Image (cartoon, rainbow, N blue to C red):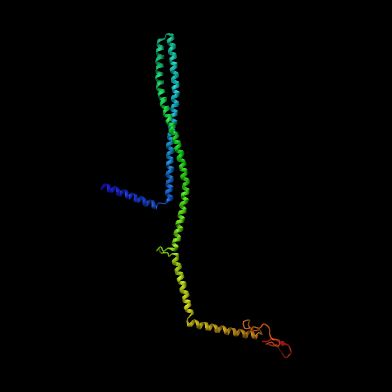
Length: 274
């Protein structure tokens, strides 16, 4: 039972993780990855700084012990010289005192030499660790810079992918029926074409009816009457026939007389025709 619950819990966790990854914004995830890399680099720099600080501290301790070793060594030599001088003068008490002091300096000298050897070994390993820490920081810094440069490339690719997806979606909405409230472009075009075809068909049907033929006859009659009236007006004005009604010959016979002669009044003055 417990094993089944563990499996179910792991399965649920994996499913939730998969759903989250599918719906998560890649741009935000990329920013999180960069922030995590920067935080990791900061922690690495802190650790490297601690290693370098330990190396510097070890070196300072070594320098201090070396200085103390030199001083104790000088004091031990001085105590030996003073004990020898006291022994040469026959001063047994001073000889004993200086000898004991020389022995004390010698013991301290031995202890310092051991400490110095240990510090030298520690300083050597600290120097190696410091070099490794510096190299690690440099490598991680180069990797971080590469990630930052790749970030811009990935963001550009992401924007291009989003644009392409929107274009594909837009083109698909023009030719595919998606079943939404908004009709597609093809549906609208089909509707307009159908309406236009119906309008043309209705016009053809109306043009073939008796009423339309009667209207054509009435219009033709009106046109004939209008042309006759125009001919009458032109004749009264002394003008020739309209170009459409003129005879085909371009020259008149030699003996032809004018259709209208000017009339003279009683005083013998010509009057224009009315």
